[in-house]
Amino acid sequence: MLLRALLITFTSLTLLSCVSRESEIEVEIEIEEATAHNSVSHYKIPVMAKSAGITSEEQSYDLWLRKQICPDFDKIHQDSKFSPPEAVEALQKTYNAARRHNAAAQAELGDRYIDGNAVPKDWKSALCWYRAAAGNGSAYAQYWIGIFYQNGYVVKESAAQAAYWFNRAGTHSNSAAAEAQVADRYADDAAGIHDMGQALFWYERAAAKHNLTAELALGNFYANSHEPADIQRALSWYGKAAGQHSVVAVYNIGQIYYLGQAIPRDYTQAHKWFLQAAEAGYAPAQYNLADMYYRGLGVKQDWVKAFAWLVTSNAAENNPAALRMHNQLTEEFTPEQLKQASHLAADYSRRFGNHSK
Image 1 (cartoon, helix red, strand yellow):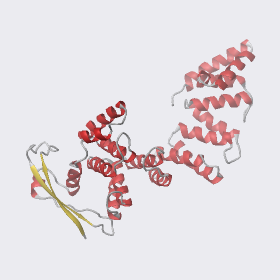
Image 2 (spheres, one colour):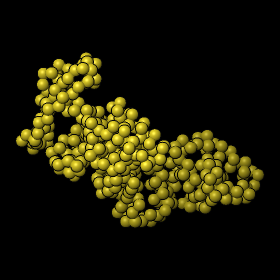
Image 3 (tube, helix red, strand yellow):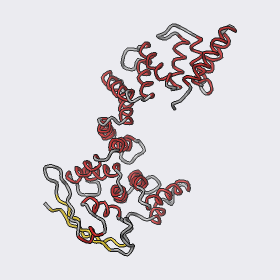
Image 4 (cartoon, one colour):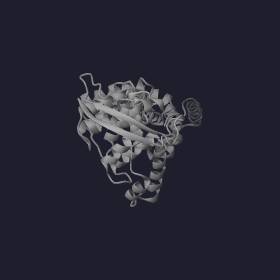
């Protein structure tokens, strides 16, 4: 069923070098209702457009998207007049990049209008910038256009259009990263669309494609629970992230066992995971190992190793408890023990210095 036909005239087209600035191209776009196979849109490409290098239906639609008339900077500046000068300066830089067809900057302006970040909340302006970014290939913006149609945000609700945009965004090689980025927006308390249910939905989509950011985010979400079943989910997601060499995930698994968070405390397991993270250069794990050796938690008490891991972590520089541990150890050591501990600390620092932040 034909929804609408749009006749769009483009003047001063500069997207293709073979077209002069005075060229005028008519592109007729026909958007059809989705079929049962979610084939949403079909576009007719007239001869004039083909002669200018517009050779596909999707190209013509993207061309229309890139020509969106979004608020110019005078309007944006008026909208942001009560913002701090530094915020207006950052907004100006983003706008300048957006006008140069930078998709990330265009998508950022869309986010700003949803959040009311240095501009008033304006979902129509947000959609305009997302459309421009989508036309420049942003999978993130394409997902957001789908969300607009899915929920009827300033457009007529359309499952067909939502499916088209979700499917199109999903064809990008970075679609999982874009899905995780959408989830991050929903998870952000400061965002204008905070919704943890939606955040989990999008994180799970991304994690199904082995996106590390999403796996960590899901692990963090379930780790904040006090339910044993959720802690097991956290361990599962952290395990997947650890399989992708995430030292943070390795450390977080150790923390769950170390704290006994809704499951029995297990210092042996905590030591195993902390040691793996510590040897990868992760300072928080190195400090926790120092504490375990200092107090004999799950390991034989060993102040020499405690000192070596403590020095390697540099924790004594800004952690009062670590400084007290350092001072007590140096006071209690015999000269021979201090020499042995210092040599081991130098060896650990050389091999396991803090490589990961």
